Amino acid sequence: MSVFRSSSFSVPHLRALPAKRSSVVTVLDIGSTKVVCLIGRLEPRAETRLLPGRTHDVEIIGVGHHKSRGVKAGVIADLDAVESSVRMAVHTAEKRAGLTVESLIVNVSAGRLRSDVYSAEIDLGGHEVERSDLRKVLAAAAAQIDNADRSIIHALPTGFSLDGERSIRDPLGMFGDHLGVNMHVVTAEQAPLRNLELCVNRAHLTVEAMVATPYASGLSALVDDEAEIGCACIDMGGGTTTISVFAEGRMVHTDAIALGGHHVTMDLARGLSTRLEDAERLKVVHGSALPMTGDEHDTVSVPPIGDGDADMPAQMPKALLARIVRARIEETLEMIRDRIHRSGYAPLVGRRIVLTGGASQLTGIADAARRILARNVRIGRPLGVAGLPAAAKGPAFSTAVGLMIYPQIAALESRGVERAGRYRAVGGGGRFARVGQWLKESF
Image 1 (cartoon, rainbow, N blue to C red):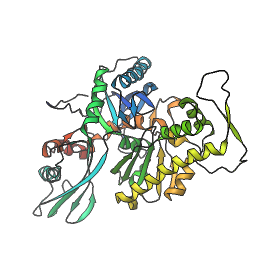
Image 2 (image 1 turned 120 degrees about the vertical axis):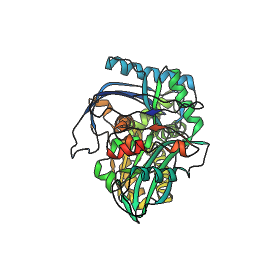
Image 3 (image 1 turned 90 degrees about the vertical axis):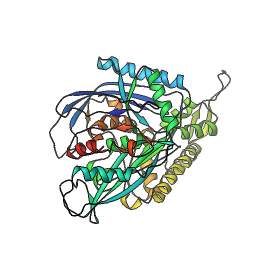
Image 4 (image 1 turned 180 degrees about the horizontal axis):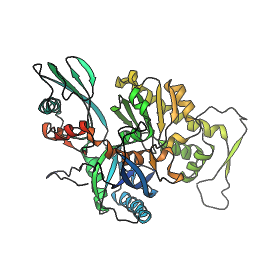
């Protein structure tokens, strides 16, 4: 893989993953609570019914993770602290894989992620759709992008139309009078992206591509039927909760809110007057998003903030702890419900929600989500990757695994928008299938 550079702002692009050759890919998930580095070997695979569209089998050969410092609500607040965490995670993964990392794919949660859809239509005159027509219609959609203050992370044609007939995935070679396209564009503010790349560069590493966290999580946690029929993937991380909506196999909407599992920990630390480490332990061991049904007199031992021998642990009602946890979880889920409703994609989501991310492991959260979101809910874990240690097979590692899957489907993106619009593009490209071939060649 290689990296292209822009004169004013370094813009990473993925080149094509060799379709018939093995490759080694390194990814970095920089979160608010942990930094994860995965090194994987990608081996070509034949097309199968299981996980269609995947061009390679993924085997993880190196895993490293370290406590995240200097990241608040997904935003880098301390470059030195984040650099140190990145170095530690990458070093551990390198040691286990027995190789040295020079470049990697990194996730993006900050920068006020935003989704926009741009539509365009051109006249065909009744002739066959050619690559030049695809170039024209994609350029017409990209020409509408006019915000210079944000950067493109993903540009996904979500569907073409011919003479009003919609949901055509590959119109090449078909006949019609009018060719249209809908393009889903995910953008973020430029400053957080610059800081993210700067932080990685300071660790003597190069960013190959940036991938929106909700996209990576959906690629990892959703099964094919869910992505095809329509589903929302909710990644509940430490500092942020992200939303991605998939339909017909494509991501059609994304959003993020600055609430996560760390906010529950903070609420407990304040409400119980204890240290953050102890509040985190209490959340994991005793926390629940469900109403208390047991004895109201049940208590838990809460260590005090002070270090003196005279400071004895306090006995707090377990019901109090549950109320603190439940209040924040319900607030987060209600915000998710409202965001999905306001997005206009609630009908596409249908009756299916997948929760993933570290905070989704809280006891009772699936039941609380079913009640508040009024949909079927399951907890999503990373799918389709071999070699993960047992500790990395849970929802907390969905984003990292999704970053490893991303190079195989990056060809679905249009790479020409940075030329047609005033945005700068950040993300991947490639040629892994026929549709990927003409999208790559479109500009």
